[in-house]
Image 1 (tube, rainbow over the protein chains, first blue to last red):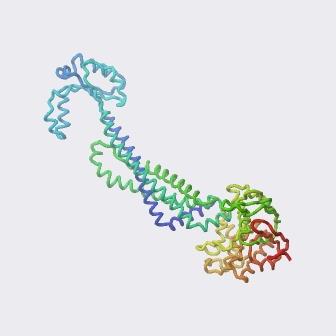
Image 2 (cartoon, chains in turn yellow, orange):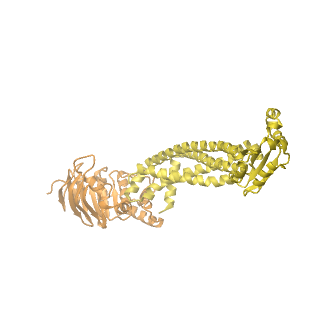
Image 3 (spheres, rainbow over the protein chains, first blue to last red):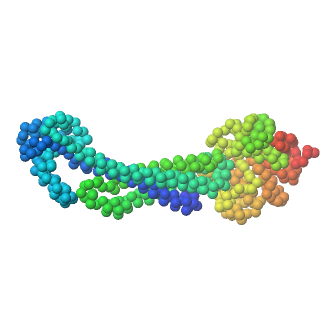
Length: 300
Length: 229
């Protein structure tokens, strides 16, 4: 097996079908970039979930009696709940917030963002509550002992709200994968087409190769390598596009969200991790496609 | 060397056999003319030899190869022991004479040192050492066929198959090609050549196998093109 011959023929083929090569490079670059974007959004969703899960709390809201009369959780009803929760495994911290404190916090959050809501809400509308941080925010078993106590009005779990937010990111990811898949189909057809055109333009050489007993490696490898080279160039362009996109578009557009830790940033490390995977997937796909296209074209 | 044992070939596109129950033996070092009108089965005979086609029934043996039972890479091995010359030369137009010949060695993985030694030797043998750098379109028809012969024998095959190698050449040039094929045959290579070139067959008086509508109608040890005299 002489690699030199195969590589030389593959490069020659790329040059010979230059317009087709360019079309293939662009198409694979776009589909690989979209595929990589899908992976990056997935990673971003996971990281963002982690950010939120670090912050989410469970609120155990008390009934009207505790809310109206207990400013510091000194009543028997409040202490019963507090002791049960603090004594449970898997609870990191428990803070009591009285009706007044809850109202102050409410005003802090909504005075600027929704002044009308802030103005129309009276302190009486807000209950006193225990704010509980769980070691595992997705495991609510430590709260089971207090769930049915009469002084407990409602247990509010912010994880439910988090799911809604991350579902949006998941939708973005799914849409990206869908477009990537459509692009990939276009790339596959282009590869098949390119290989067949290349094989046609070299049919005389292939006839001679078959006649003198060249192995399948020698007759077919140049075409497969041609497709792989084009895909690799596409993968390099896709990676460059991801870095440029991150630097000049995503980072700028999302800087505010990054700074306020509302969304996890895409890092260069993430791109370095995803790019080789996507390149390998692209190369394997193009190699297989080229091989199949050749099999249907070249009689052995 | 070559044995055809009750070989029949029927193409799917035809009901009449292209070759019908052919049995014959060709010994090592023989020079054989394969003659007959168009459609008589000459090309099918050659294509079965190099396994471009396979038999419908019967057996073909060549050297250590059971030709009709070869698979995959074994077919490549068979073809490396057989040189093939086409009527229309089939030189690669973008390669010069040297590279056309070298190509046949390069694609079967021969080492560079072997190629550098073998190509000038074979070009010298066919009388084209001085034209190694020429492109095919700069050569006459006879010279192009010499390059094709050089390409066919550069790997020192046991058998040279030639499919009407003088079909596109004028009589004088044909004589030159026939002389070259004789020279190769004298070197020990078995030659099987299909032809319509009566002059060549009559001049050389070698074995003649005549086919007609796929059947063997004549096998003369020192035959001529027309009926046996």
